[in-house]
Image (cartoon, rainbow, N blue to C red; front, side, top):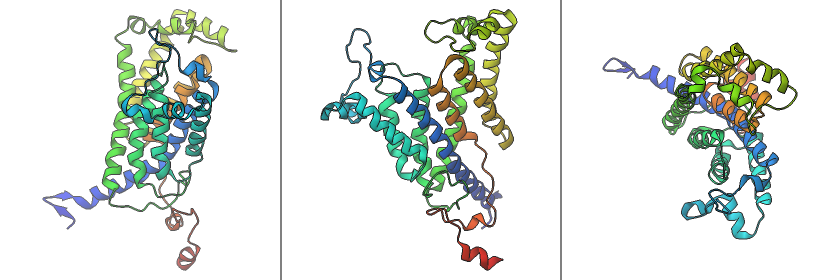
Length: 317
């Protein structure tokens, strides 16, 4: 039955299949970028700086209840140093980046993400975003039967889990859109952002301010009223545009990804926020990375081996 009470069920089913397939394929790109951002945290931040005293508590990491299954808690139980645990987590994250067996690395990636986001003393917004998106990608990955998530042209085979994958992919899109909408709207409640002077103070912050070769040009630019106004309101407008474009057409979603790359690359260049930038670009990629349709030859790719079924292709030629 093609319709029921006038509803085009075949077309709806085809849309679910297409969206689920594209979401699975783009999720690998996003997961790798998120994992790369997490690697930078563990690789370039000494363990002693990840766990600092808060409110006079010498070790702010709690291992009560379900938190006892975190990597650093388990490491403490067996006598491993936190540096050794960090190395172990880096190995896991590199496995995620390489992309082999994405269906099975997804839960391990979630565990590694939670072990960082929920245990270090001072997580930033990137860790919180990573935890939410990686959790949703765990569900999306249930439909990923490729041997490696970099096989972007491998054949997609629908399964009974497809509606769940579709729903999780929708939630990923909404979640990422909400992150950027909230980021832009929350700035409007701050006087410095309203006045367009926020980045003047950010650039001169002793902890998070500008550094490197572009310090002097950036300080000069933010020292000009028009410069700090342009940069401050430009960030708000770009974040709002990303939030809206993610929910629209494929072309505008691609534009949203470009805007996210430009915005967060600026954070890297001027402020040095490598991990935050990579994680957020990865989150946006999970919702926007363009996926091209499969050609007739690629229809014969084996998703488990990534090799073309030559006999089938030759039979058609």
